[in-house]
Length: 248
Ligand code: HEM
Ligand SMILES: *[C@@H]1O[C@H](CO)[C@@H](O)[C@H](O)[C@H]1NC(C)=O
Ligand SMILES: *[C@@H]1O[C@H](CO)[C@@H](O)[C@H](O)[C@H]1NC(C)=O
Ligand SMILES: *[C@@H]1O[C@H](CO)[C@@H](O)[C@H](O)[C@H]1NC(C)=O
Ligand SMILES: *[C@@H]1O[C@H](CO)[C@@H](O)[C@H](O)[C@H]1NC(C)=O
Ligand SMILES: *[C@@H]1O[C@H](CO)[C@@H](O)[C@H](O)[C@H]1NC(C)=O
View 1 (cartoon, rainbow, N blue to C red):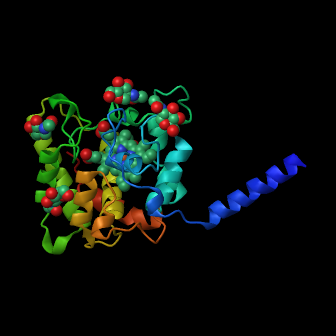
View 2 (view 1 turned 180 degrees about the vertical axis):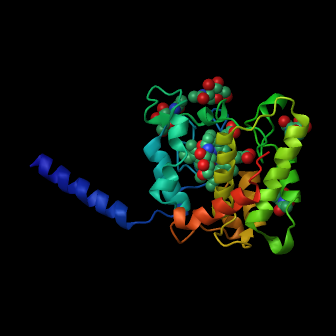
View 3 (view 1 turned 45 degrees about the vertical axis):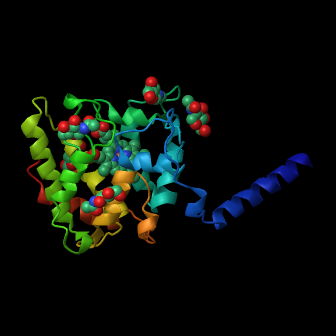
C-alpha cells in the first residue's frame, strides 16, 4: 500500500514537472560568494550564478549541466552535452565519470590562450573576468545599430588572438583549442547575442552577459523560443570557421 502510493506520488510529481516550464524567477541571479568557485567559461559561470547548476561550482553532474543548458538556453540535449566529456577526462571530483568541478574546465590542457574575456595564463590567473581584454574585443566590433554579424564576431576573435600572440612568448593555439573557440563563439552569438540570424545578434545583450555574468533580462533578453541544435547552430559555426580558416 505504501509502495503503491509512493509510486503514484512519484508519477504525479514527474507529470507536474513535465508540464510546468520553470520560470526564470525560479533561477534568480545571486552574486557568487567567497566560497563559490567560478571558471574561465562565461557560460558555466552564468549557469552557476543563476543556480541552474550548483552555485558553489563543485560536483556538477553531467546530467545537471545538460539539464541546465536545456532549461536556461533551450539547447537540445546533444548540443548541451557537447563540451562535457572533454572536461570529465580532467575531472578532479570523487566521481569523475559523472561530475566535474567548474575549475576543471580552466586548467591545461583545456585552458586556451587568446580568450576573449580573460588574460593568458602567462600573465597571471586566467580565471577572473578581465574587463580590459573584453572591452578591446567589443570595441573592435563595428557596432552599427547595436548588432553584429557572424563574420564581424569571428574577425574580432581573430584580432584578439593576434594581439595575444604578439605579446605572449608562450602563446600556443592547438587545433582542439581553435575548434573549441569556434564552438564557444557560436554559443556567444546564438545565446547571449540572442539570435541565430546573421546580422541580428545584439551587442548590448552579449556585452552585459559577459561583463555581469548574468542573463540580461533587464535589457529584454529572453531564451530562444526555438530549440537550438545543429540546424540552428551549424550555419553559425561554419561561418565563423570559414571567416577564420587560417587559425592564429
Ligand atoms: C557544460 C557546459 C560547458 C562546458 C563543460 C564548457 C567548457 C569550457 C571550457 C573547457 C572552456 C575553456 C576555458 C579555458 O580556456 O580556460 C570554455 C570557455 C568558454 N565557454 Fe564554455 N563550457 C560550457 C558551456 C558553455 C556555454 C553554454 C557557453 C555559451 C553559451 C559557453 C561559452 C564559452 C566561451 C565564450 C568561452 C571562451 C571564453 C573566452 O574566450 O574568454 N560555454 N568553456
Ligand atoms: C575552489 O576554490 C578554492 C580557492 O578559492 C580552491 O582552493 C579549491 O580547490 C577550489 N575547489 C575546487 C573543487 O576546485
Ligand atoms: C556544492 O553544492 C552541492 C549541491 O548542493 C553539494 O552536493 C556539495 O556538497 C557542495 N560542495 C561544497 C564544497 O559545498
Ligand atoms: C587584464 O589584462 C591586461 C592585458 O593583458 C593586463 O594588463 C591586466 O593586468 C589584466 N588585469 C587583471 C586584473 O589581471
Ligand atoms: C577541428 O574541426 C574540424 C572541422 O570540424 C575537424 O575536421 C578536425 O578534426 C577538428 N580537430 C580536432 C583536433 O578536433
Ligand atoms: C558593457 O556592459 C557594461 C556593464 O553592463 C557597461 O558598463 C558598458 O558600457 C557596456 N559596453 C557596451 C559597449 O555596451
